[in-house]
Length: 136
Length: 111
Image 1 (cartoon, rainbow over the protein chains, first blue to last red):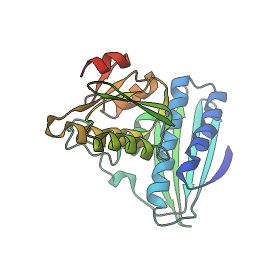
Image 2: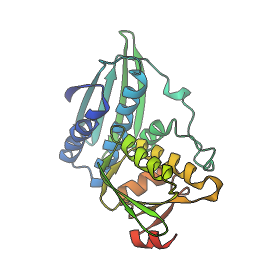
Image 3: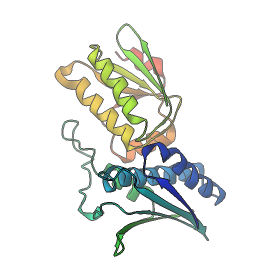
Image 4: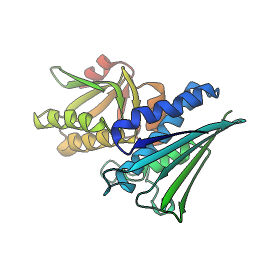
């Protein structure tokens, strides 16, 4: 696993996508999968920056990523506000324009684009989000 | 990300180039809002040179669509949506909220 730390700021999303994209390409994922892995990681990092670190200006986001056999694992660790993703309501994709809510869309996309997404709050005040993508 | 606005007789075309994420989506939102502020509610978003869009961009498009469609004064349509972005929009259930056109001029002709 390769690990990099980023200041939890939106301006680093480009680098975050590049980091996972390079490992996914090297790991032999298709262009479509590489895009989707980058999108899922962007959504995860954006949520951390926007919500977990909402009240913290110097937050750090630790991103680890690696391939093992046909599985790519991406781990994002933050030390901000914890949240329970299962409490975030799924967006109603059939709602009409006026009723459509955008909240929860990032988590929805992460779940759809990756094979497994799980979230764990560790006792040392760190939140660990793990996403797995299988190469087909 | 780079935005250029081109005025047509019956609509404005907003061409979005590069990558739209949480860092750059506010610029897209602002471009759409300033069109609305100028009384323009018929908008073509030209995505032919768009490389990437996250849900932050979807959110900007949704807000603009709501504002444009109010009082039946117009709508936002999408043109030349790249395949990867179209797939993500579809997954998010957004393709039902926007008319899409393969060609930007075809989209302009819609108005």
